[in-house]
Image (cartoon, helix red, strand yellow):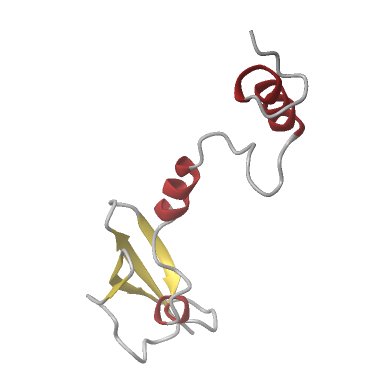
Length: 102
């Protein structure tokens, strides 16, 4: 038998999501259709909304991915980054014994 909603959160905002409609189903968790500020839609469990585990339709993660320029630098530097940084040390930055001053 489809679940009934205990706490109606219709119209409430959770991060970028606004709860629009209760979605009845046979699972243990009440779910709501939510509309994101970006226009996307997502069905989310009420617990995830209330506890703050879900704050958008996924657009926050997409935006965060675009903040990185290339992903090679940082704490886990790639072989490509290390090669480039070594070349810059030798040729441009002057931080290497092989740096040639003309």
